[in-house]
Length: 309
Image 1 (cartoon, rainbow, N blue to C red):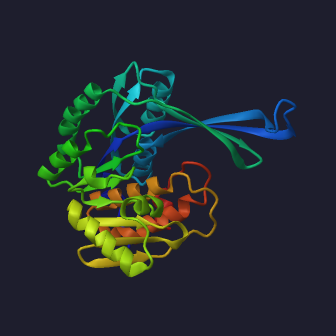
Image 2: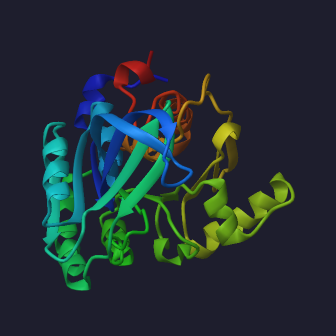
């Protein structure tokens, strides 16, 4: 299945969710600290990448489509750095700023080609700021083909139910990368894309595939979802919809780093649906994108050329 670059260039995805700045500090580990039994890392290089919903939007533009990004951030150095990174990629950002909010930063310390430590800096946005985002969402909605909510559980999607209702009213496909144990807030979405761990927290464990299908079908009916796409790591992914079950096997030749693989899956799915493909037709390509991205280090993306090579 191939889709032309021209067709993708017209596809418009509105990404809403929690953004973060991913910082990587790379260094050499040559000794253990005399103060505590920990490695001493002599930092030799620093790198910054857009993370969370910002990485999702970046995945959309890397495929050659258009992305707008709606989020709440702090009035701090990290948010301006993030805005500059995103501006350079052609993503249209619409940031609500709150002086009391800390823009989420995930700082990873890397030594000897592996992650030694991760430090998170974050807090939760105010309700008033989030309410103003709903108005911004309503204004942006008509200009886009698909809406993608990227929930990282940082509080930026407290009003997601209102936004889903608005998007439904305008008949826009709604894709959600969910978080937490309560999926009822995602009621009426088109597709949710939980991983196996997230799914288990919501529907409980399953013994076999038929029990899993029955439990997901029950959830799908309860929440009035068109489909559930279960991402299953090295087992591939399975789409559960009104037609039943469609499974694709994992394609990764070599798994180097799974960071951001879920971002790539949902971004590819949303982009292809915005370009006119059905979720079933877009599934094998989304799976292929995941296979490519886990072979790269850190939050990574897939280009049009790689996907359709």
